[in-house]
Length: 298
Image 1: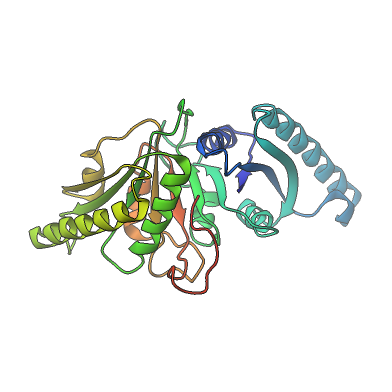
Image 2: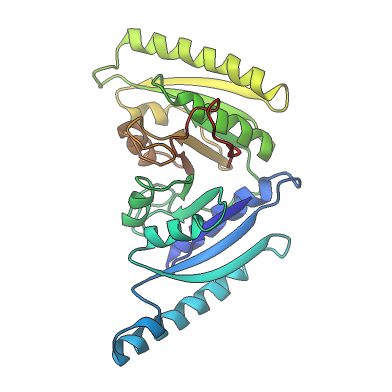
């Protein structure tokens, strides 16, 4: 497995590394993870610049980036294979996608905006761009993320619209791969046009059906549970749930997403700003029974 980790010179880079290490160290030994620590610089490499001042400036930036990567690389245990690289691109998001698509990649890991409140998300321009364009799953670490001693649970947020089954398949495979329990959650905001008692009951029925399917899929390989929470809003529903420090939330892309691409929907956006734990957003893959041979897990 390969994770591309977006490294910056502020705490977003440290948050991203912390999350990448949490995920890498929790995978079973049969699925070792390689970390690609990537710092993206805007513009062209020094040797491709048009003038001497620009060349000197890019060389200065390159030296700084390499020093930052060297210090970050020292944080990675020797037991985990890792590499460092500086990539030049028009933006950090574009650069990370470039690196991720050069060869098979399972995950892009980035930190939240550096001005976000502690342990909450404030989606910056980099994360926002990735969450609307990445062809591979994106993991977002909340501001000030501290790596737990171990991953304790994977939670999958599931709606009732088409596409939820793909997110469920990814969650099932990932929970088995990380050897953690799987929790399925269904959130109901009663202030929305669909937030009625009837819709709440439909969500509970849907969640029970998904629980049955997930339980059959894991075949006793891990524990599966389900929670349905409602509130005046999606944010209020999230606050009703309990969250472990060692928990990760997985959510699928909006039905508006292009095939094999991420597009963060309205509900996911609301969740993102309320969650106290990391979130992984999965692209809108074709249905599992189509000609798509990628291992659906993170």
